[in-house]
Image (cartoon, rainbow, N blue to C red; front, side):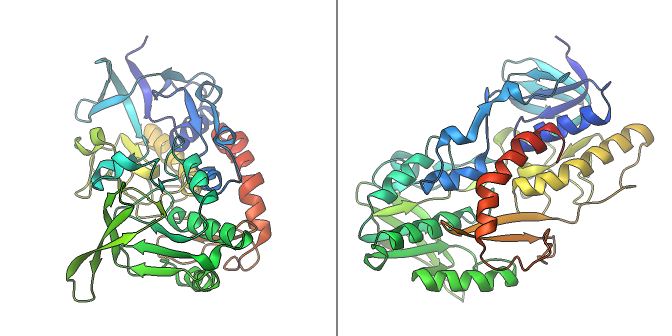
Length: 400
């Protein structure tokens, strides 16, 4: 097996597969390798709906082999280290792969251990999370058994994949309780370390109405720091307007946790990252700021946009164009540049969704010729039925 390739892509997730497919469509002669250990590929945006009982995990999974583009070498191993000065990637097996160009797209790392007591109690004691194929079904189990008491939903202080996911499952849970006559008997609390409900004011106004409709208490500058699972107590760090911090304990019957997240350890230990620990790229072209033959996109990159699959759909063709331009001319940026587009389909109930699309400056960047700040049944149907097809048959094939 070759140890050197024209282009090595780390990661067989949304970003890695999409870039590989587009590169092969653009230039079949390229020798491309994907480093990816998993034999399964997940469509993660549906995990919220799994937690809400709409879909099952089986709806979200396909064999990885079905989506490795024809002619691309699949190295079924994990990357364990990157030496960008030698254009080399070390694999978990100890083998070294070298490259002419590197695309870094391993996704994001879930850090359960950074919340004290969480790893020991997740999946029991009413402590659930949609951030894992093995965990989302328990969210639905807990929700079905919830008839009274308190339901707490949390968001960490770190960047996360799908910034709207912490709220989406809360709105689905509230709608479920409403439909079954239990909403008045459950105290729903959201714990956010931030200072706003949503970063784009036009969509925040709509969410205010959703929060009021369900009677949700939305706590700003409240961060989950520990879970006492057997006692069913969440420990929350509260920051007051003057910056003083105290801790409070909240009992719960349901606790949905979104864990802290980061770039994978082997990325953070490399020379590729910025001071915040993300792959340091130019935000419009995806070229690394210090290593010109390295590119990165998706959740692991330093681009200051929401970390979503919709962002990758816009990023991938621009990265491919810039990489090929550099390969041919030694320059980048002659074509279209990335404006920070991201999309967050904010599920607000079983039959409603707000499609929040916005750019780097948190300005709405709609794809449809109607007011997308409104809750719409049609957008929920799009999320449930159209977007998965677009993903499996479009994005991962380099067609959309």
